[in-house]
Image (cartoon, rainbow, N blue to C red; front, side, top):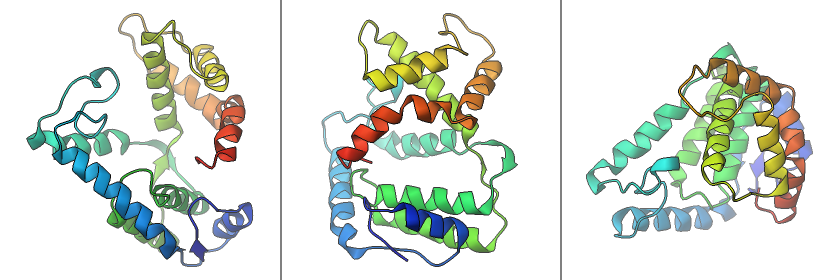
Length: 217
């Protein structure tokens, strides 16, 4: 199946979920992928501070990272996200996760190199043949939501879009703002339950619809 980034259809996703045919990214996406990768490479080699490229993340956004430590910065970012708990995800879901990530990166807005997308497609092939061992990502999403909620709290009284405020309120309904150190395991579990129930998606549905209309997702 030939995938055109930005133009995935529900029919294609259903076919991928139920089938196992090989996938390719349409060659028309190559130029955009390479162009955005060059921009990131130039930023990494340049003198200007660029968030997430040569700075820290979140509260450390103003912390400049030395040129010699940029590779370590990206490696640590990958490691911090490469965790999961719970039962292995179904093979069909693993295929969809890999395809959606590859198709999203192939839109040419992320700055990743083409080899990253190629590796994701290689993993897709492996997922068709091997028992998938990707851990359930609901806990990772929950951690990301809690981190984002705390970041928004630091920026008050500023507010974000109405739909995102709705997501924030939902998160805060089960996890109060962190004013002092505490065990966050119950909070993560509670937010993970919201994710599993689909309530987070419903709370942000208006925002997703708006972005889709602009073809940003």
